[in-house]
Length: 379
Image 1: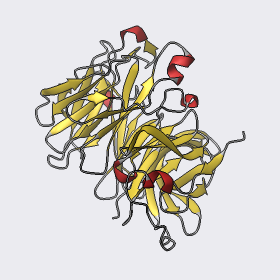
Image 2 (image 1 turned 135 degrees about the vertical axis):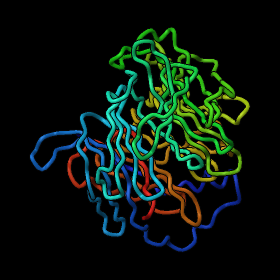
Image 3 (image 1 turned 120 degrees about the vertical axis):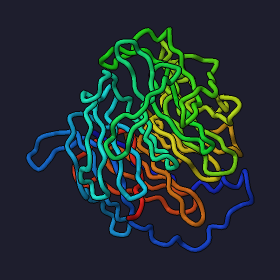
């Protein structure tokens, strides 16, 4: 299959619109090697196709990607969480029933099957860690009743130690806000026990803030359009305390989905769409979201193969910064000058930075990356 693989190497014109014009300066220093925890589907040494999670070593100077270690799984993984020690946690795709912890070389530390727990709940694909308490938080669903829950888990055993209602259905991702709150994206989509969407006319998405220690409800916000599912979350990298919310349009017609926004913003008081118009080819679907340069956000328009940059200095614009077949997983990184992003795509990964030349690396073997990945800390 032919896939486009093109990156815009710079977006200085947009930068100049919101702050003094930047000087290009001397060429950037060589990009240091980076390690990513990722999930993918590919063929093992025996030629059998399987779902895996593991660690990728990206050597930008050599122009290569190497699989450091990989773990076979019974199904797709979705969200991943980097640990302070260089390891990571991976969570099964909805409606999954397993999660695992691995070290920085992709070796399995711990795996938990939810069949070992008394409830029949399923995981919704994401996990968050509270460094102040040490607990993990996993959004989950009761498949019999459709209710959303947040499980509090022990990071050593991965077992549940407490549970709170998410005050919605289809809770997908959650993030801590730094002020004792846990922000939960209730996607609002009713599903069968197998995870298939039903009764879209009854959708009820919401953004919820819970007390991260007690689970008490501290606030709840909704968009005017109930067909905009609230999916993924990312904080901007500035002092605005602005949360970016990636949206998934579930309208009845392709035209309605094409006209739907990809992004909403929450400032602690209100949840609103900024009016940034997405390309119609994006189909109202943002696959991932990450912090971008200058207090902005990067979104992946997976259906259109686009990396899109929203910036508060041009709030009604989404600037295309990358064109990549099946672009989805994003990992934000920062150097001394500015923030950039790593983007996973069908043929490989790409690095975009507003002040440096773009670069792309091919996969070391045929592999289909999943929706999310994370940069790993140095050991």
